[in-house]
Image (tube, rainbow, N blue to C red):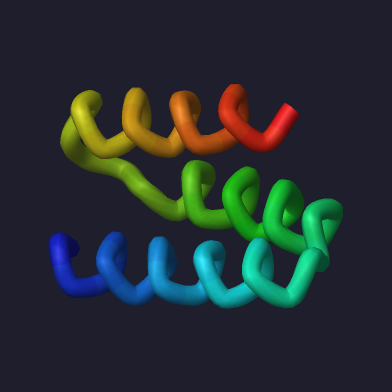
Length: 53
């Protein structure tokens, strides 16, 4: 699971660097839905979404 989260964060970072903010937001929401365990991971994704807004 941790590798998946790291890969997801890398993809989100890439989208942000490319200034594809809406795609990044959508990817974050999709990733969050896929995270089934670990409330800490879900909270981290929430923080990322808040920072993009």
